[in-house]
Image (cartoon, rainbow, N blue to C red; front, top):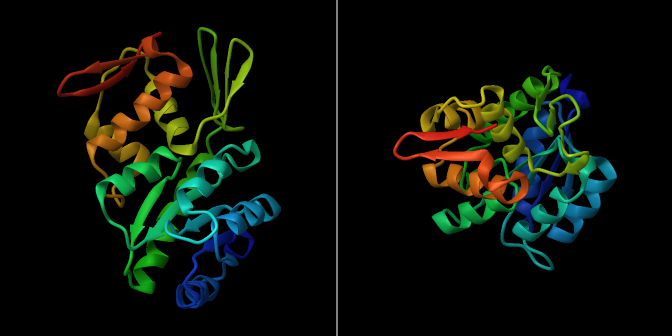
Amino acid sequence: MKKKDIKILLVDDEPDILEIVGYNLSSEGYQVITGENGVEAIEKAKKHKPHLIILDVMMPEMDGIEACERIRQDSKLNNTIITFLTARGEDYSQVAGFEAGADDYITKPIKPKVLVSKVKALLRRLKESDNTDVAIKIGDLIINREEYKITKKGEEIILPRKEFELLSLLATKPGKVFKREEILDKVWGNEVVVGGRTIDVHIRKLREKIGDKSFKTVKGVGYKFVD
């Protein structure tokens, strides 16, 4: 996919951020759409179906966390990557962001060139997922990586991107214990700094949606998918 075909939705209530970040991304050749609050984020995400959304947390009318949750409820935006760009760096805020369905978390202030590098890294994940078209079938569970769709007993289950990728990884080798380091590397990538707690949050969400018995915790090591 060429840069000129990639759409990025940038949402922030600070005009300076929209101008500076928007300019740098546009200069790279990306299509940039902007919004100033969570309500606009949802409206423009549904209208333009961006490949990447860069979302501030603290905004008027609707904050980024709620906007992210609502965007993740739209199955047509399953493949959209969402990253938060915010001055809030506290652990609880990051966990709330990941629970809402975010893929990454970028803390302000950040140099424009560094931000562009982060964006390129995030978009590489999109490219990698586009090249994967293998359907995984385990019992009554079907994981269609090409369509980013999960079905269990014939019923579709909507998963945020990171939950989908974590489930896909564990399900590729049922019974294998995936170490935390391997999960972080393959699902979040080396360029993203997240803690082990992030994995726990995503596993908890998967247990709620797929079934508690499908995931086994191996204390001090990691997790495995149980058929």
